[in-house]
Image (tube, rainbow, N blue to C red; front, top):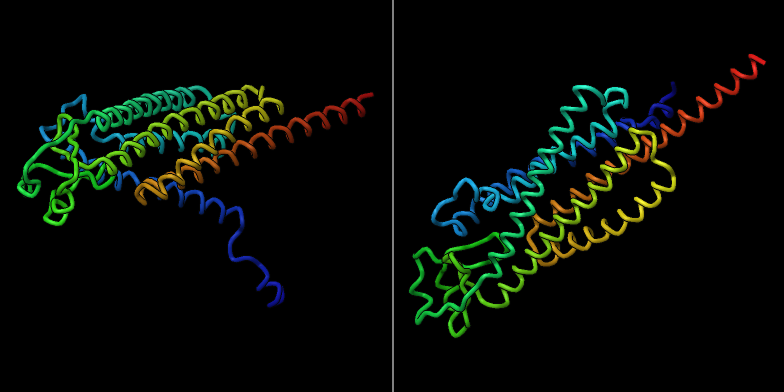
Length: 295
């Protein structure tokens, strides 16, 4: 091989580079679990100032539990659509995967309940009346900076609240003013919308995988599912965009990473379908050749 040919030869195979990129995205999503735990923990010290009971854990750590369940579900899709052969998904393997899948969906639906509970919490408010807001500095009272961020009152903040109608979230020591409350309530609405939309996306994917394993995923069904998912993904892109403008960077980055991650799953399903179609064509050709030789 000449020096020129050696220079033209890529240092890494494109397919390998694609897989490295894919699993880098998955690793970044794993890192988000840690970030969401820190965020949930900080928020829970304010929204559950009296302590967290066992049945309130999902409400306190909704984002963390939701992310863990979604990540496990994502890896299950990766196993089914890329890593494992169709013949391997049977018996104990299939039973184990289905059991884990059911558990994931239980946590995901429960997390949706957590997001709805947060939505209800943020909409249960009463007017907060005090003669001197600055007298609350150093007490248990906090203010909403943004969704899931409740900070202690400072001199600068309390001075900004002077002559401003304040609102208190019922059952907490969290206060805010109307504009900030409205923005927080909108972000909570976006969280609920995002959670429901993703559930609908994976429902379509589950149907596709089921039909694929049964050999019943026709071209007509593929086109119909693509149309449905296109609408759902448009909603998710709008959600990510809203978080990018109004929300925190972590929520925006996480939403973007999940869109990329499930794009990989979509690619897996497309390649899987192509392989099955090609195998059927090859089998048909072999059968015709075999009949021709026999005759």
